[in-house]
Length: 254
Ligand code: PGA
Image (cartoon, rainbow, N blue to C red):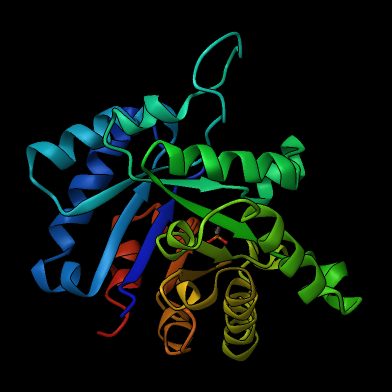
């Protein structure tokens, strides 16, 4: 059985002081039953990880900590980069890898993304591998080719056991931050396509990999998306910045 997972991708928002309040407020809105049903994760910017971690540890909150990016080398002359172990030592357990903003704005290639996936796994953390097509690619009918290629490239050289524990987020680029969500059926079909692609690579392990939807997920559309067999949760951007709204997404069945 795959446990649902809802992760808030704060992107470049929140100072370390704001992060403390956001995590605290979120925790006031959630109870034991919610955490039983959903693994809750927040992904603040690097500069806020330490303060978020302190709140989580001090208050014994069952909230997972995620980072938004990482570099694949362990240490050295890589000005401005952050190594996997630096995150692991901060109790970071998830790392978003290959978000479309990293790919499009910062030139990350499939090869870079694959290196990062492996580095995150080597450090004992869970990659959230992001894949998705542009609007033009969807119109051209190459959505499956694009997404399938990203999944295969991202998972190259990763073992089936590792793939079983991973998270893959399907995020159609045209739906990110636009208020336009993929229809439940389209998102569900792509999640199934991704699981089938993973099964080609890793066999039965694909049944354990958690697949998220991301792209303007909000309290109004989350339930329909979550009803799809192969959608196991969400990667939530804008709607994760307000703790009340994010709690409503997490409690999607209410
Ligand atoms: P959004 O972002 O929810 O604001 O569309 C999702 C993401 O980019 O992870």
